[in-house]
Image 1 (cartoon, rainbow, N blue to C red):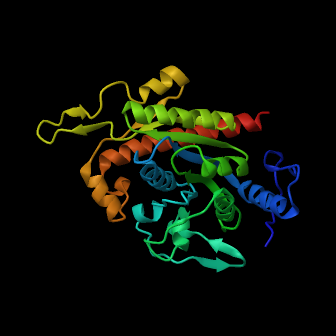
Image 2: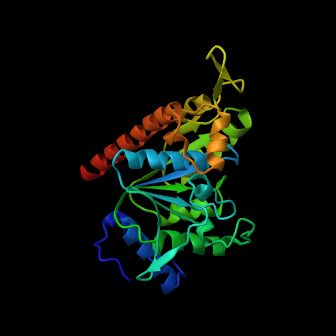
Image 3: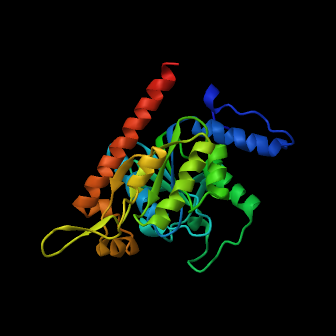
Amino acid sequence: MPDKHTICDDCRIKKLAGEDERSFEQRQRIATKFCRVKFRLLILSGKGGVGKSFVSANLAWTIAEKGYKVGLVDVDIHGPSIPKIMGLEGREIVIENDEILPIKYSDNLEVMSIAFFLKGKEESVIWRGPMKMGAIRQFLGEVAWGGLDFIVIDSPPGTGDEPLSVAQLLFGPRGSIVVTTPQDLAVGNVARSVTFSRMVGMQVLGAVENMRYLTCPHCSKKIDLFPGEGASVLYREMGVPLIGQLPFKSEITVMADKGILAVREDPDIARVFSDIADKVIEFQKRLNIARESK
C-alpha cells in the first residue's frame, strides 16, 4: 500500500539515467517511508570480529530506553547475528497489508534481519550484489516501520555492497559510527570506513573502541590488552572523536550466546552505552536544528 505521507525536499529523489520504472518507484517508496525517520545511524567496521553487531544491538536498546522509537536493521546478508545477540532466533515473519511487520523487542524497539527469513542456522545465503541489493530494498521499503526517531543499521564489515546500498537509499539526516578494537590492524581498516562515510556524504559521529582493557579481578586495575594509541589515532589523523571505550569481559560473550543484551545486566557496559547514546541524541538534535535554520 502506498504511504500516505508528504515527502520533504531532502528525501525527494530523481530518476537515474537508464533506470526502469519499477526500480525508481521502489527507491521513491523507500525515500517516502524513511522521510518519517528523524535520524538514520549506520554502524560500520573495517573488519569482522570487532563487536559491531554487539554495539548496534546494545546502542539501539539504550536509545530506545531513553524514550525514543527505534528500528534496528541487520543488513549483514551473509552473517546476520542480531537475532542471536537479542534472543530473537526462531521468530517468524508476519506480512500484513502487503508489508512485513518488524519483530518487536520492546515497546520502543523493533528489529528486522535476513536471519528471520532463513529456515535454519545451517542455511547459507549465496547471493551476488544485485540480489543483496534487492533484499536490502525489501528491508528498507517493505517493512512497516511507521514513524521512528532513530533507525540503527548494522552493516557487515568493510565498505562493499551492503553499506553502499544503504548509503545510496537513505536520505535525510544521517550519520555513522565506526567500531574497532585497539590493535593497529583493526584501526587501519576502520579508517577506510571513515573515508567511505565521507565519500557518500555521511558524517562520522565518532569511533567506539571495543575490548580496550580488562579489569584485574584481584586489584581492579585496568590493563590495556593492546599496545599503542588504538582508536585515538583516528582523531589525530582524521578528526574522528573517540566516543566510547568498552572493556573486555568474557561474561559478555556468554550473555550474547544466550541472547541477553549486556546493557541489561552489566552496569559498567550500560554506563558506556548511555554516554554513547547521549552523544548520538545530541548530534541528531544539533543536526535538525541546523537544517531547520536554513
